[in-house]
Length: 212
Image (cartoon, rainbow, N blue to C red; front, side, top):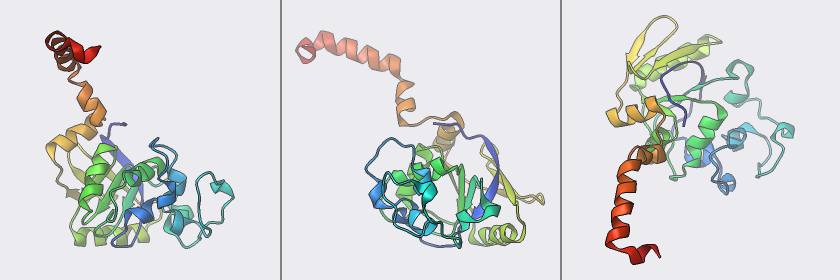
Protein backbone atom coordinates (compact mmCIF):
# COMPACT_ATOMS: atom_id res chain seq x y z
CA UNK A 1 0.00 0.00 0.00
CA UNK A 2 1.09 3.60 -0.55
CA UNK A 3 2.99 5.23 2.32
CA UNK A 4 1.33 8.25 3.89
CA UNK A 5 3.67 11.03 4.98
CA UNK A 6 2.36 14.50 4.14
CA UNK A 7 -0.64 15.46 2.02
CA UNK A 8 -1.75 18.91 0.92
CA UNK A 9 -5.22 18.26 -0.38
CA UNK A 10 -8.45 19.84 -1.50
CA UNK A 11 -11.20 19.26 1.07
CA UNK A 12 -14.66 17.85 0.29
CA UNK A 13 -17.27 18.44 3.04
CA UNK A 14 -19.74 15.59 3.55
CA UNK A 15 -22.07 17.21 6.06
CA UNK A 16 -23.85 14.10 7.33
CA UNK A 17 -23.61 12.18 10.58
CA UNK A 18 -23.75 8.38 10.90
CA UNK A 19 -22.69 7.67 7.32
CA UNK A 20 -22.70 3.88 7.14
CA UNK A 21 -20.59 1.58 5.03
CA UNK A 22 -23.51 0.66 2.79
CA UNK A 23 -23.75 4.32 1.82
CA UNK A 24 -19.99 4.43 1.21
CA UNK A 25 -20.10 1.35 -1.05
CA UNK A 26 -23.47 -0.40 -1.58
CA UNK A 27 -23.75 -4.14 -1.06
CA UNK A 28 -24.13 -5.07 -4.73
CA UNK A 29 -20.49 -4.08 -5.35
CA UNK A 30 -19.01 -6.42 -2.74
CA UNK A 31 -18.51 -9.38 -5.07
CA UNK A 32 -14.95 -8.39 -5.99
CA UNK A 33 -12.02 -8.66 -3.56
CA UNK A 34 -9.43 -6.99 -5.82
CA UNK A 35 -9.27 -3.81 -3.65
CA UNK A 36 -9.31 -1.64 -6.78
CA UNK A 37 -11.99 -0.33 -9.09
CA UNK A 38 -14.45 0.71 -6.37
CA UNK A 39 -13.84 4.47 -6.62
CA UNK A 40 -16.49 5.13 -9.33
CA UNK A 41 -19.08 3.54 -7.05
CA UNK A 42 -18.15 5.28 -3.80
CA UNK A 43 -21.36 6.81 -2.37
CA UNK A 44 -23.14 5.33 -5.39
CA UNK A 45 -26.72 5.84 -4.21
CA UNK A 46 -26.09 9.52 -3.41
CA UNK A 47 -23.84 10.21 -6.35
CA UNK A 48 -26.04 8.94 -9.18
CA UNK A 49 -29.73 9.27 -9.97
CA UNK A 50 -30.15 5.64 -11.07
CA UNK A 51 -29.38 2.37 -9.32
CA UNK A 52 -25.84 1.19 -9.87
CA UNK A 53 -24.85 -2.38 -10.62
CA UNK A 54 -21.45 -4.01 -11.20
CA UNK A 55 -20.26 -3.67 -14.78
CA UNK A 56 -22.25 -0.55 -15.61
CA UNK A 57 -20.66 2.28 -17.57
CA UNK A 58 -20.53 4.88 -14.81
CA UNK A 59 -19.56 7.57 -17.27
CA UNK A 60 -22.95 7.27 -18.91
CA UNK A 61 -24.99 7.38 -15.70
CA UNK A 62 -26.96 10.50 -14.61
CA UNK A 63 -25.25 12.37 -11.78
CA UNK A 64 -27.02 13.86 -8.80
CA UNK A 65 -26.11 17.57 -9.07
CA UNK A 66 -26.88 18.16 -5.38
CA UNK A 67 -24.34 15.65 -4.09
CA UNK A 68 -21.17 17.32 -2.85
CA UNK A 69 -18.69 15.12 -4.74
CA UNK A 70 -20.37 16.01 -8.03
CA UNK A 71 -19.82 19.72 -7.58
CA UNK A 72 -17.03 21.19 -9.69
CA UNK A 73 -15.30 22.94 -6.79
CA UNK A 74 -14.61 19.62 -5.04
CA UNK A 75 -13.25 17.65 -7.99
CA UNK A 76 -9.89 16.12 -7.14
CA UNK A 77 -10.44 16.28 -3.37
CA UNK A 78 -8.12 14.08 -1.33
CA UNK A 79 -9.34 15.04 2.16
CA UNK A 80 -12.88 14.11 3.21
CA UNK A 81 -14.47 16.11 6.01
CA UNK A 82 -17.32 14.30 7.77
CA UNK A 83 -19.45 14.28 10.89
CA UNK A 84 -19.61 11.92 13.87
CA UNK A 85 -19.76 8.11 13.70
CA UNK A 86 -18.49 7.96 10.12
CA UNK A 87 -18.22 4.41 8.75
CA UNK A 88 -20.84 2.80 10.98
CA UNK A 89 -22.84 -0.24 9.89
CA UNK A 90 -21.28 -3.40 8.50
CA UNK A 91 -17.59 -4.26 8.75
CA UNK A 92 -16.99 -4.40 4.97
CA UNK A 93 -13.39 -3.59 4.12
CA UNK A 94 -14.63 -2.46 0.72
CA UNK A 95 -15.57 0.90 2.29
CA UNK A 96 -11.98 2.13 2.78
CA UNK A 97 -11.07 0.49 -0.55
CA UNK A 98 -13.70 2.65 -2.27
CA UNK A 99 -12.63 5.86 -0.54
CA UNK A 100 -8.95 5.27 -1.30
CA UNK A 101 -9.70 4.30 -4.90
CA UNK A 102 -11.77 7.47 -5.30
CA UNK A 103 -8.69 9.50 -4.34
CA UNK A 104 -9.07 10.26 -0.65
CA UNK A 105 -5.93 9.97 1.47
CA UNK A 106 -7.19 11.42 4.75
CA UNK A 107 -10.52 11.62 6.55
CA UNK A 108 -11.40 14.12 9.28
CA UNK A 109 -14.34 13.59 11.63
CA UNK A 110 -15.18 13.82 15.34
CA UNK A 111 -15.57 10.03 15.59
CA UNK A 112 -15.61 6.80 13.57
CA UNK A 113 -17.06 3.33 13.92
CA UNK A 114 -14.35 1.12 15.43
CA UNK A 115 -14.05 -1.54 12.71
CA UNK A 116 -14.06 1.02 9.91
CA UNK A 117 -11.42 3.04 11.77
CA UNK A 118 -9.16 -0.01 12.05
CA UNK A 119 -9.70 -0.96 8.40
CA UNK A 120 -8.60 2.49 7.24
CA UNK A 121 -5.12 2.06 8.68
CA UNK A 122 -4.82 -1.34 7.04
CA UNK A 123 -5.58 0.15 3.63
CA UNK A 124 -3.56 3.36 3.46
CA UNK A 125 -6.20 5.83 4.69
CA UNK A 126 -5.55 8.18 7.60
CA UNK A 127 -8.71 8.67 9.71
CA UNK A 128 -8.14 11.78 11.85
CA UNK A 129 -10.29 12.55 14.87
CA UNK A 130 -10.66 16.20 15.88
CA UNK A 131 -13.08 17.77 18.36
CA UNK A 132 -16.54 18.56 17.02
CA UNK A 133 -16.04 22.31 17.38
CA UNK A 134 -12.89 22.20 15.25
CA UNK A 135 -14.66 20.06 12.65
CA UNK A 136 -17.45 22.66 12.62
CA UNK A 137 -14.87 25.36 11.98
CA UNK A 138 -13.34 23.39 9.12
CA UNK A 139 -16.77 22.91 7.55
CA UNK A 140 -17.43 26.65 7.73
CA UNK A 141 -14.06 27.53 6.22
CA UNK A 142 -14.36 24.91 3.47
CA UNK A 143 -17.82 26.10 2.42
CA UNK A 144 -16.73 29.75 2.47
CA UNK A 145 -13.58 29.35 0.39
CA UNK A 146 -13.55 27.49 -2.96
CA UNK A 147 -10.28 25.64 -3.38
CA UNK A 148 -9.87 25.22 0.39
CA UNK A 149 -6.95 22.91 1.16
CA UNK A 150 -5.51 21.37 4.30
CA UNK A 151 -2.00 20.12 4.94
CA UNK A 152 -1.99 16.81 6.79
CA UNK A 153 1.40 15.84 8.23
CA UNK A 154 1.37 12.38 9.75
CA UNK A 155 4.92 12.52 11.13
CA UNK A 156 4.09 15.72 13.04
CA UNK A 157 0.47 14.63 13.64
CA UNK A 158 -0.87 18.00 12.56
CA UNK A 159 -3.55 19.46 10.32
CA UNK A 160 -2.76 22.96 9.06
CA UNK A 161 -5.31 25.33 7.51
CA UNK A 162 -4.63 27.94 4.78
CA UNK A 163 -4.57 30.70 7.40
CA UNK A 164 -1.91 28.91 9.43
CA UNK A 165 -4.01 27.41 12.22
CA UNK A 166 -2.55 24.11 13.38
CA UNK A 167 -4.53 21.27 14.98
CA UNK A 168 -2.78 18.31 16.57
CA UNK A 169 -4.33 14.84 16.36
CA UNK A 170 -3.59 11.60 18.18
CA UNK A 171 -2.66 8.37 16.45
CA UNK A 172 -1.46 5.05 17.81
CA UNK A 173 2.31 4.63 17.30
CA UNK A 174 2.00 1.22 15.61
CA UNK A 175 -0.67 2.44 13.21
CA UNK A 176 1.36 5.54 12.48
CA UNK A 177 4.35 3.37 11.60
CA UNK A 178 2.22 1.25 9.27
CA UNK A 179 1.04 4.27 7.31
CA UNK A 180 4.39 6.06 7.20
CA UNK A 181 6.03 2.95 5.76
CA UNK A 182 3.15 1.67 3.63
CA UNK A 183 2.87 -1.61 5.54
CA UNK A 184 -0.29 -3.68 5.23
CA UNK A 185 -0.81 -6.97 7.10
CA UNK A 186 1.06 -8.98 4.46
CA UNK A 187 4.00 -6.57 4.43
CA UNK A 188 4.24 -6.77 8.21
CA UNK A 189 4.33 -10.55 8.04
CA UNK A 190 7.00 -10.53 5.33
CA UNK A 191 9.27 -8.55 7.64
CA UNK A 192 9.71 -11.86 9.48
CA UNK A 193 10.48 -13.97 6.40
CA UNK A 194 13.73 -15.29 7.88
CA UNK A 195 12.04 -16.54 11.04
CA UNK A 196 9.21 -18.10 9.02
CA UNK A 197 11.63 -19.96 6.77
CA UNK A 198 13.67 -21.15 9.76
CA UNK A 199 10.51 -22.46 11.43
CA UNK A 200 9.44 -24.30 8.28
CA UNK A 201 12.89 -25.89 7.91
CA UNK A 202 12.83 -27.03 11.54
CA UNK A 203 9.32 -28.47 11.21
CA UNK A 204 10.36 -30.46 8.13
CA UNK A 205 13.00 -32.17 10.28
CA UNK A 206 10.71 -32.66 13.29
CA UNK A 207 7.63 -33.83 11.36
CA UNK A 208 8.57 -34.72 7.78
CA UNK A 209 5.23 -36.53 7.23
CA UNK A 210 3.45 -33.16 7.26
CA UNK A 211 5.25 -32.13 4.10
CA UNK A 212 4.71 -35.28 2.00
